[in-house]
Structures are given as structure tokens and as C-alpha cells.
Length: 96
Image 1: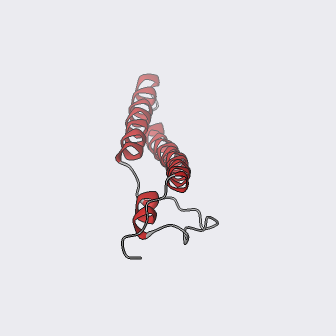
Image 2: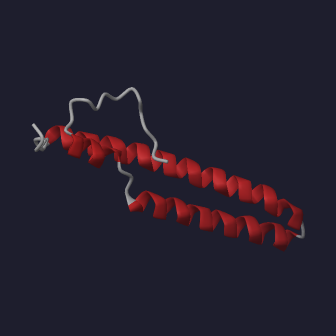
């Protein structure tokens, strides 16, 4: 689910612009997936190398939490970048 700021009023935007601003991009999911893959690899390798394999499971939860946090931050950033872009260059709604 995309992060959404309910404090931002999007009613002044056309339906097309609202759809553009609220749609998540593929890059945020790719980057957060990469962060999860790196975190998962580290969470697997370190406990096995030091002989404490039972620490693998908490490491998975940490990797998941970090990747979700990264996704939320990137979606917030993308939302405000798109909102600024649309407010600077609005496209008229064809339904009006």
C-alpha cells in the first residue's frame, strides 16, 4: 500500500493528476526489495559465521522492518516530488 498523507488536500487536482500523484513507482519497490535482499543476506551470513544460527530469525525481522521503512520514506519523497511537479504544471481535466 502506498503511503498517503491525509493532511494534503488533493481536491484541487484533476482526476488524472490525482491518479499520477497517488500511484507508486516501480523504483521504490525495487530499491526496498534490494535493501531487503542485502539485509536478509547479512542476517543469514553473520549468525552462521559466528556460530549462532538462532539469531537468523530476529535478523529477518530487522531486515523486513528496515526495508519497509525505506519504502515508506521513498514513497513519501516521491509523493511530494510528484505533487510539486503537478502543481507547477497542471493538466486540465478533460471531463470539465
